[in-house]
Image (cartoon, rainbow, N blue to C red; front, side, top):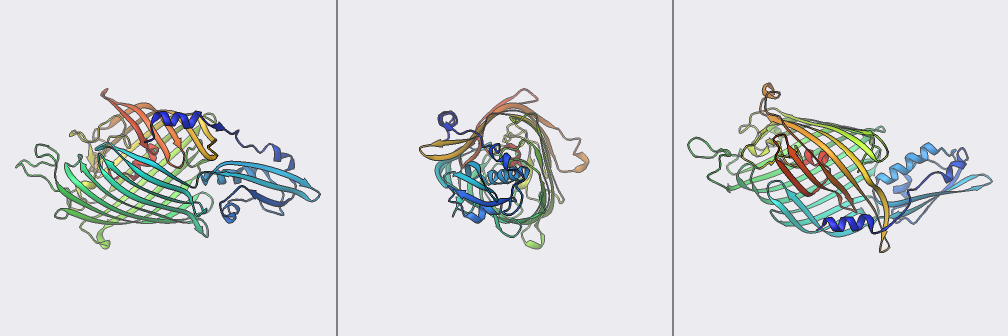
Length: 449
């Protein structure tokens, strides 16, 4: 397990390289680029070349070269990029010297669920599969719940960043939110392309099979009727098949993908569940996701984010109850216990986040036992607020929940971000969380609940 002590060893116990600089090659600005040489890379040459707007035969522009390096860093497959130049009688020869991250990493993965606690198990992740900037991830978790999954991401196959993303998982768990045993199978496929420099378009298909395997607690008031029977959480007899087609438009100006300091990420998404695609469900979902990053210094950032999802249809008729939104937990409004019986839920949701982030260990190029990684750590202070409702008429009248707190984020090699957070709600209740995966604003839009 990625425990706190191991994180500190990784962050502070290794050789740290100095940040790469363009200072040396600035003296060649305006010179004709005669050749571009790559050293140290196992990544296919064409993968690197297509990220470069600096071209042979054209004058060298430092601003363009800076953007080239930023795009190469955003591939997240290089732990270090050193740039050099050699002048000759006809111009300048550029030399890129790369150190690559470990292409495949076996590790012990974990997930901590608001409902079910800790599950952990073996995993393997490749961030540069076949040396083509392909991510392949597989894991099997057991403990508080059982889950196994596989993930595949190919961000640029051909053309103008035509991409493919695939995700499949199987989960067996106690659904404490809806008071029943749950078996979930999910298949998700997404493909997209760039539209210009900052605009993206994506189409996606998702298939969910959610099975109700029996009531957990007959004394619970969750979904309990006056006559002592329980309201069905599925539209089918004891299971739902939920096919969904969707399209989304994205505007992305982030400077760095995994820990932005400036820019924005905005998405408008429309999806149809059921209806013409089959199943008993039949509803539309309109989603708006806005994230803006304001740099204070190179190490300090303020993030303001907003997520809104609106659905048509009626709960229990067009929309199964196991797909309603619940407010609370580490991936919506921190400081609240999402599995308590005093739940705030509905078919519509709004979540807002204000977060200050100080990168006390900026992303570093490190070497351990001859292997190369990028690591980092930050301190955060945050406040979240949100609501859920079944009617837009009552959207502003429903109870709003607000939480606040502070925490630590750790960027770990090939694994993504882990969070340790201490949060309180507006009633003064305290809820600590340990080693939660992914940034909160990323995780809140991909959760089932």
